[in-house]
Image (cartoon, rainbow, N blue to C red; front, side, top):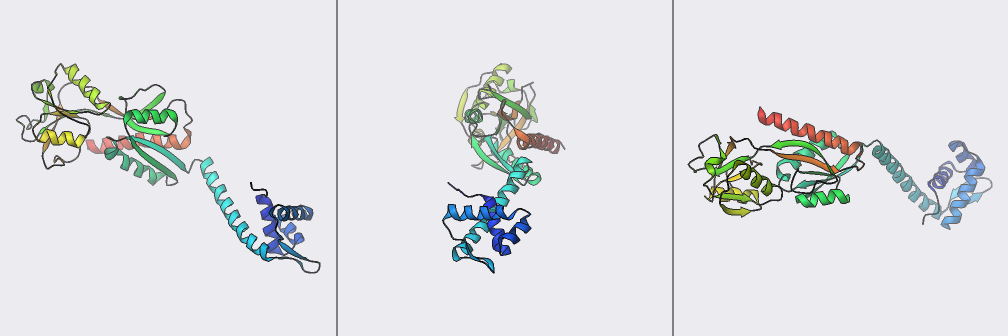
Length: 307
């Protein structure tokens, strides 16, 4: 345990720099006994002889004193840095956000969201964790992440608060050579007899199953995958149609196939992208600032995509 104080170190450095207790006391604007007592205490707790005392010439540093002065100088510099960083933290101009992101959403949204926030808040670090939906909810509740970019379904919402960022309308994906692929949009009833390629992800699977049930069709499942790109490849290979809310910019699949994306004519419920947090938890200015930025960022993306 450290038994000396920064104040004692400051008084020691002043004596070393000014060559005596009286001179240091004047420079620090304190009494000579205060400086002398601090110096005696510092030598006592460290076991060092810091000065040679001369009646005529005041004090001079010993070898131990010269080495210790180097350490004290570095210690005070570090203490000043801590003070500056503490002030920035108190003003919430610096800090860290532990952001969890649902792994399906991450390649579409995470990088640009984090980069755009760094441009306006360079003192704040974002620690990214890609996770499953249920893991995100659990991590929020236990406090191992601060915020989660996720869907509004697929995990138990109890104890969580949500800010809506986007409402994603589902789309039909067909092979590029499918007889219906030349359409701009399609009614899901036209696909009732078509085999269905299922994206088997938490949240998305139940969302699409509910959607098909609401439309009143129950297509035969021909292929199942937890990977969005694997599902697209299966569609391109002729396994059937699929439903997706995330649309990669290229119509070419990873294996070189081609797909066509069509809008849905039916009235369907969107899947919401949200920024989730633990309900009732202290958020502070940093987290509120990030949440506000996320809302603005997603709004600007919608504007850009619509233009």
